[in-house]
Amino acid sequence: MREIVQSFLEEIPKRLARMESLLAEGNQIEFRRVVHQMKGAGGGYGFQEISNAAAQLECCMNLSGEQWSRDCLAHLVTFQTLLRQAHAGLRERR
Image 1: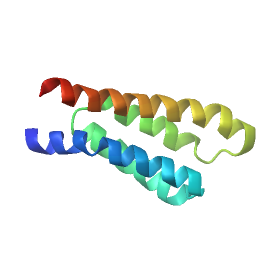
Image 2: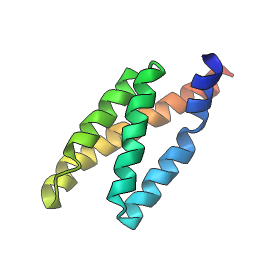
Image 3: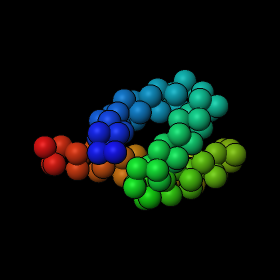
């Protein structure tokens, strides 16, 4: 199990880059899929905070305009921060 968790953590920079690319492209369908995958993986690998942040982001994705900007952007920043912190923890363990 340790190897699977390590693999999840090692993939975080690629996932973050993918999410940023999808947002820049305006590809909300694929972006939602990536967030949903991270929600499941985070919880499955013991990173409940990541899963919770992804769930909050996923819930607000149906919003648009100013409400999306205000609500989803805050959840997105929290989600990205937690992912970066988890990845940084991997480097500290080595």
